[in-house]
Image 1: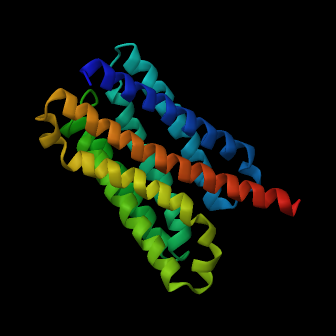
Image 2 (image 1 turned 120 degrees about the vertical axis):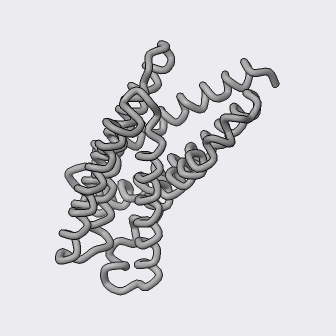
Length: 223
């Protein structure tokens, strides 16, 4: 397949991903009042993620530099997901250390945008840091589920949502880690890799959407 064909497939996947993000954001808004604190934080994240993806795609399709959005989004994503995981994993006493980590992480992301990579450059360092943090906290969450206990059992219904988030950031961190090598590939091979990445992101979005629908259906049965 030629470059144009691969680029078209990639464009279709971009709209599919945006469509799924819109569904997830819509479910989040619809059921926001009935969610517990952790899911409310996650709902805000999903709504902002949809807005970011929509604006980013619009700018890209109109030939406008959208890299500055990734700097802003990295801070938002880091803050909300750390807040989400801190509520699931850590005790009230331990959360003050997590919030200190959050502040230091935000300062690092700002420093990266201002002094290291710049607002007009792709912030690979910042995004790698965000994905590494999310993957670490996801693993700690699943460890908590394996250990069970009252806390683990109370948050077991979140496991598929977090699995979807885990897949998203696992794919992102692999791409970021091998970005230099990927940039040396032929254009067609680069497109194929981005299509494979998009397919995995679609799977992650479907898992998250179905997990939300399951919670939504369960809530309706209780009414």
